[in-house]
Length: 374
View: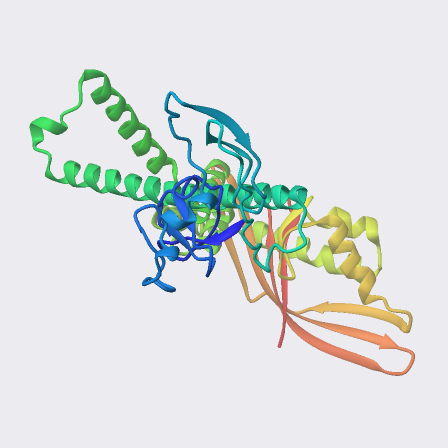
């Protein structure tokens, strides 16, 4: 049966060993006033409902709280069955020898339990006990969690304080720990040295490629990609060293003819001739780096649209040719020459003027080409 704790008023089973709210003992340590139904602790001798009436004392309610007493020699024990309510059960009671039994008046059952069978009362008490146990277990688990958390935090704080206040002698590790620390420090330094950014890796890779090729064009390409790179000063010095050499008339004519053959192939719409006029890979072609022959041919195909009847490139006089060493006894030539493209279409004819800047490699092939409109 659920009652209110006489000490704190918390709801508790009358069969619970103690109150989960205040911890006071319950089962076997309380008594009930027969008139007002209020529960009291054993330490309370009377009820406050009518304290001036002797019948309201705890001793007047002895029949509701059976006790076991040691029978004297002339008294024999007998079993007396008392009426059952939520708080009492059949117990053995002493009986005076040869004294007739006097029926006891059963206390009135409270309205809250009126109509309940003994089985229902027993089930209710068991359910209440289980709920009380679960609540108590949850409270204990919560308190244990906070206790462990506080303990761990306290230990961590103590350890941190001890580390901060430790003297040099106290913090010196043994030989094994010292070696482990040194190895860890060495590994950390190695990782730091090896930790390069993507730009640094690219800078080093492009410089190695330029230095391996050893050409002016390779150094220029490095400077284009890394104008403020780690090796930019060395690249500029290499370019300066490879820049310009005495140019003969035959070399000048050869460089011009290489560029002229390029445009003649386009005028004829001749793919084979155009493929023969250019290097396998052009360092740049109309803004694209590392252009393949197929891309140059596609450029020519795009010029000959469906309505184009005829197309002709006309080269002017060479304005500048430079001879640039790229290695021992090998040179490339930079040619700057004006040009114009005349396109005859079914509806009209258009003319566009350009400044052509081309590079011819030592094999007489065009290795780069840029056409800028005037």
